[in-house]
Length: 85
Image (cartoon, rainbow, N blue to C red; front, side, top):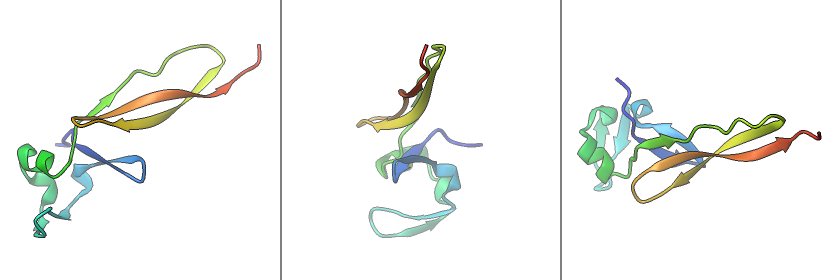
């Protein structure tokens, strides 16, 4: 089961499920990092990802970008290309 806990790495979201091993803030390396409790993972900086629905405007293409707040990571949309009418 994939957890909805993520980190932004180089501006891209990474799911904790991909982290087979990891190093905790206290310096300990953990095997099965992805299986740690949500409380521990949140304390390590992993946050839920909230996805905003992409707008649907004819002739407009959007690209996703991510914003990180204190409590979550949000996928948002900005205009990438606007077709001339």
